[in-house]
Length: 161
Image 1: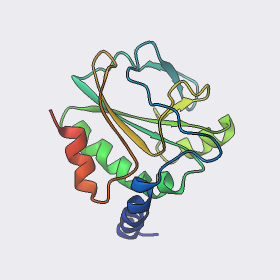
Image 2: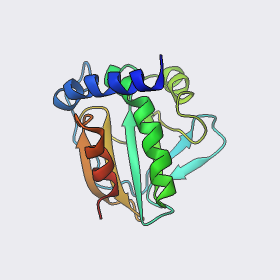
Image 3: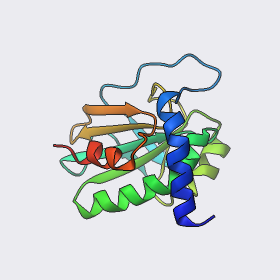
């Protein structure tokens, strides 16, 4: 699949995912209002990240699940967004959760080193994909469930002061 066709697929799925975006088999739970005190290990288990200690003024957090087709379709877009935000001086994290650890680790390979695993489901988003902007103390400044129909909306959401 080419990069452009993957983005088109992500956008097409995102329209539905933005409207639906709920966890299969369980009622949705409220997403965290603060990530203070939440520490997650990276996919290879070599480091842990304290989400309450964002290294930049704000951090962009993408929460996805291995079984989520919308998340899978949005993977290239999330990866591109992370690069763009890093160039603007904003750290970003991808957190994979809502499944068994082997599935989390397998999906983490798509995002590369530093992908975080929520093996204990410490963050309870109301649907996936779910995006957060947090401050340097881990307080959730804004959140959005699902992938907006226009990827530029997600860029604006992440970069908004």
